[in-house]
Length: 409
Image (cartoon, rainbow, N blue to C red):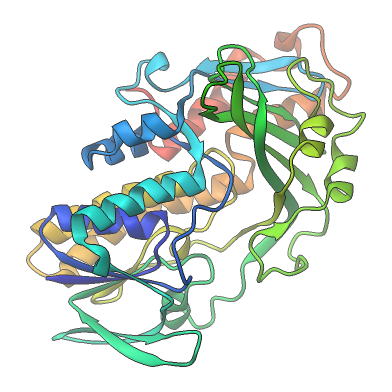
């Protein structure tokens, strides 16, 4: 059996590894001219790390990223709203790993090349459509210079992102990505270690949020960490179109993000304005998603990752859910009596779960705990229990963990 994968991102590459492990031939088509290690920080939750461990990648993850020890939610004044251990420190069987997204893709890509061969990844080709029959699927491809060709397989996996051409053919009336009026600025730079060098913090509330966590250890600099930061703030009206929506990683402009943090945050571990000003290059991302779909699978064609379930970047779940989907899809293709039955089973297993996460992220996900506290105590508090009880705060954070499938058992 041969699988054709549209998209060489994290979801597509992990799908290739799982399908190869199951004994299938795989061919990946990525529209970029090369696989580049771009982006900023990302968190891999324990259930996703478990899947990558099954693929023999844990040592590479540890060599590149950091095992997150603790997560702290705080208000804009640095007062702790909630804190908890993470990963193996919290009793999970696998760690939570904070890592540079580009480096994560790079190590997965190298594993694909080593195991499937260099010809398995075809860059510079976009899957722009498909035809399918009982005999298989024909993917229609185009390159930037206008060259066209086809690729044949038994199954087509659309892992080609939020602007997926495969999704567009399945759902021609789906519409453009939906912006909620919030802009996200993200960057990373070398910064002094905070606490044990493995702690993550999310501070702020409804006006703006600031995220801070280490993603790598700098060689020969034990007191320094490659550190990811992010600012999320409302800059427009929900449902409107952000500027340059087609550019998913527009270079950030300091003058546009600094007003959301300067003289507003008082954190004891970092001045958000200082780390932003110290970052040579950072990026702006519109906070977009799409409504959950009624189905992903049609015969021999299915969707995966952001093509299937684009979601707001809260709760550290987008890439993690794509990895879980890759494992699920390969598992069903391995045991089912037909491709169609396998894709339907995969759809039934993964789609309802991710639909709930998409909708939960629209409500703030686990970060809703700091929104709740800020709404009740915008000038800070003397006793967090008088603002929101432990049980109420726990319901927000733990409820999301259960929904996303990484609650400790």
